Image (cartoon, rainbow, N blue to C red):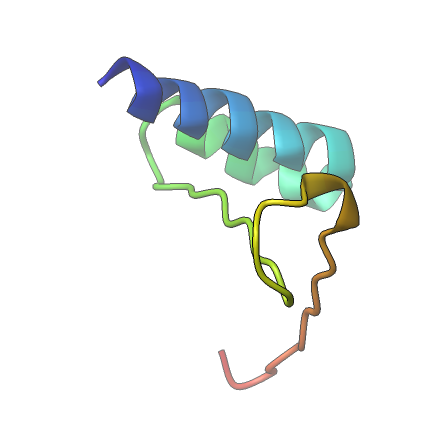
Length: 64
């Protein structure tokens, strides 16, 4: 449970606060108050665990 809470609060909420804009701040507040569920996803296009060399791609889907 400690790991789940740490990931949820540290990675998810702090990532939103540090990298999001004002319009994203409400999500961090809702997650902190357990009004919404948040998650943190780490992806690697290659393989292995080279965190410094991670490359990600995001594609906007206006239907979702």
